[in-house]
Length: 445
Ligand code: PFF
Ligand code: NA
Image (cartoon, rainbow, N blue to C red; front, side, top):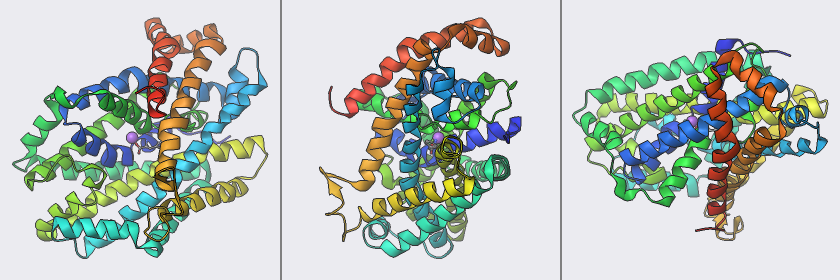
C-alpha cells in the first residue's frame, strides 16, 4: 500500500481538520454565543474529548493498516466479525460531502463576484445570498459540479499522488493567505476589540445549548466520527509517533479557528456590524464590508474566499477517502470504480440538498419540518458522528487488548499519558457524547 510520508500525514490530517468548520462555522457560533466564554468551553471540549477521540482513531488506523470496517474486526479481542458493521460510519462522510460541496460551490461563486462587484448594502447582500440559495438552481448545480469534479480528480490519483500532494500544496498557501489577512486585521483599529471579544469571558450566554454546540463543533472540526482519521492513519508509517501527530493536528486546527475568528471579528467590528449574524456571517456581513474598502476590499475578498475554498477542498477529499478505501478493500473494487460509485452518490445527494432550499422544490423536499439539506446535516453531525464516536470509545475501552494498546502508547509517550487517555476513552468521553446525542434527538431536554 502507498503510505503517506510523515509530513504528508500531518499535512493531510490537518488539511482534513481545517475546513469550513474553522473559518465559517467556528466564528459564527462563537459570535452567537457571545465570544470568550464559549471559546473556553470549546477549548476544553477539544482537549478532553476531541483530542482523546482523535488519538483513538489514529491508534486504530495505524495499528490495523486497514479500512474502517476491517479495522474493528481485526483489533477486537475476539475477532468478532459483527464489528464489520462499524463501517456504517463512512457513509456519514458521503452525506457531509454532499452538502459541503454545495457550500463550497457558493464559495466559488463568491470568489467570482469578489473580482467583479460586491454588494453595496446589507439589504443587497442579504437578497443576493437568498436569491442564490432559493432561486439560482442552475448556477448552484454548476458550481457544485465543479467542486465534485475537483474532488474526484484528486482522489482518483490515490493517497500519495492525490491527497498528500494537494495538501502539501494547498495547506502552505492557506497559511500564507491567512497570515496576510491577519496582518491586515492586526492593523485595524478594531483588532483589539476583536481580541477582547474572543478572549474575555462573558458567561451569561453559556447554557446547555452552548455546551452542546461546543462539543458538536469539537467533533466536526477535528473530522471525527466518519472514519477519516482511521483511514488516513492506516497510511501513516508504522513507527511514526501517532500521539505527537494527533497533538500537532489538534493544535493547528485550533490555531486556525482562533485566527479566523480574530480576523473576521476585526472586520465586522471595523464596520460596526453585528457579531451574531449566524450562518450568513461570511456570505452576507463580510461582502458588504469588503465592498466599502474599494479595490483593496476586492483583493481581500478574493483572498478570504480562496482561503475558504482551499481549506474546504482538502477536507472534501478526506470525506470520500474512507468509503473509497472500504469499497476497494472489502469489495475488491478498483479505485476508479469506487470513485465512480461514491462520487455519484454524493453528487446526487448534493443536488437534492440544494434543491431542497429552492423555492420551487422546497415543499416536496421538506420532511417533518426540515428540508433535505438540514436533514443531511442533522443525520451526520447530530446522529451518525456521535454514535460512531461512542462506539469507537467503547470498542477501545472494552473490546481491545489493553496490554497491546499500552505497549504501543508507551513506545511514544510516558505511561501516564496512556492512563489518562484510557480513563477518558473508557468512561468520560462516551458518557459526554451520549448526553449530546440524547439531547439532539430530543430524549432529554
Ligand atoms: N473538519 C472539517 C471542518 O472543520 O470543516 C469538516 C470535516 C472533514 C468533517 C472531514 C468530517 C470529516 F471527516
Ligand atoms: Na476543522
